Amino acid sequence: KNEVEQSPQNLTAQEGEFITINCSYSVGISALHWLQQHPGGGIVSLFMLSSGKKKHGRLIATINIQEKHSSLHITASHPRDSAVYICAVRERDGGATNKLIFGTGTLLAVQP
Amino acid sequence: NAGVTQTPKFRILKIGQSMTLQCTQDMNHNYMYWYRQDPGMGLKLIYYSVGAGITDKGEVPNGYNVSRSTTEDFPLRLELAAPSQTSVYFCASGAGGAHSIYGYTFGSGTRLTVV
Image 1: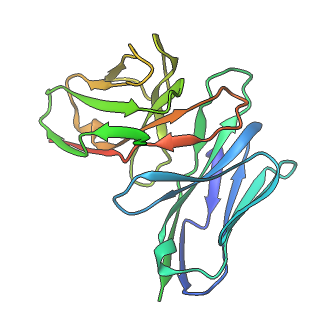
Image 2: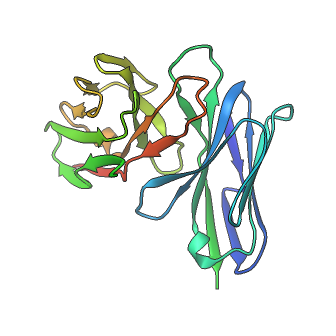
């Protein structure tokens, strides 16, 4: 079992729909990251959070440390949101390495 | 501000050849990382560095080497390339330590094929 699990693996939505991507993890963490990867492109950091909720434009990320769960929401989805969304956690290992453990990603396709 | 620059973007190698993937960052970040991304898998850490002159192995270091002679540069060396090293490679950098509030910056990736 992976230490970071994402669901769903694939998601197809119609333009305008509200989208939720989930991330569960099994290790103690100091932070959780949501990343976006466009086809053939690089990786962009969307959010880093350790508690509560963050909002940036149409994107909202929440985390429940007790439940070891995070969600990424996209409101009023648009075809340009089509990408792979990756959850990654920074393990609270007591060291200074700052290493990340990655989920396998959620492939989102938003159709016009 | 270029961020993290990786070169080359694409490369085809023959089995047994060697090459160096270049990574440079201009943000004065202490922490730098090399990851590989295989289809259907999460990114796996190859090597990392917490500062100039300091490097350490990640999860999948076999077949690779790194050096960190300056804060800016963190090249990844493949010796005797094998088909199993066909992957997309990402370099990343970060400012802080384990409890840092800072995020990461990723390069645009290098797609490597070994034939």
